[in-house]
Image (cartoon, rainbow, N blue to C red):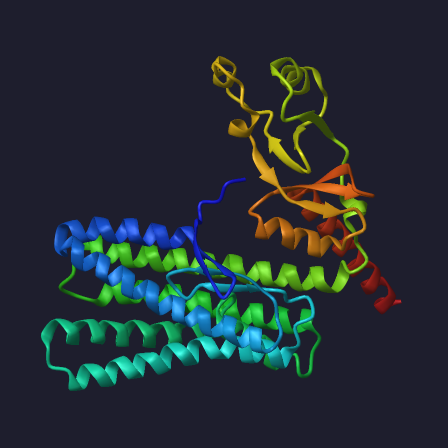
Length: 367
């Protein structure tokens, strides 16, 4: 389905995506700037923040490329962003190098901007350099803290993997990450209660924003743990194990009668639309307004979906769906449509499979 995080370009063949939280920061900061800061100055600060985060992520990506790791895309967030890489065969020492270089780059360029601000006496340039110094130092220090999905969490896990497997190392790193999140939110609460000279609105904004970061980190930590379980226990799962044939199919050139029959007379919950060699999907939850169109254009009421292979590893197929911002994929067998794979169904199957694997392991261990 369409993503709230738009792509804004590419570099070295790597797509660059602006996360929706960055857009949220822009909107929230704009509201504050209307009361206290000139709008042009606000946009300048946002551009400088964007530049700092981009350099941070570019350092990750270049290091990954040098270690022959495939980079799928760069996602830019206000707190550091993410380089989405092919981590199926990522060794701990390589993960350490890729993770550590981002914070080190931020701290390095922060020090450079700080040195320049000390020798340049032009007021407006000096203030810009001081802002870049502060932002990059904070970006580097914050990202090196031991919390998932921050770089520090990955650095910690790669270190723990010297004596543990990826699952146990991730579990311990997630526990440390959750402790850090609690301390972070508690520290923010004490800060807003003790500081003087600021409005209640400003204090609320700071606390709510840090609370949002804490929730994001908590979700990211649990996603990392789930990903570690997936890597370890679902290597034998393929798309064919969890796909479904619960779909109806019509052609892009079919008229309203075929659409009506598929939507309201069929028993399937998924409607696929064949468009030459590709496929699109349309939800059954559809407004009556589309039937008021003068010329029914199925492309206007559907979105493209990726294709995965019947015998493909399930984890690889899910990565393809994530890369395409799609919760559904067309399953191909011998060059023909054979079924559909949905993210919800796949995650439920994975959860059951992991529970079974872990339960079997515990029974053997206790016997």
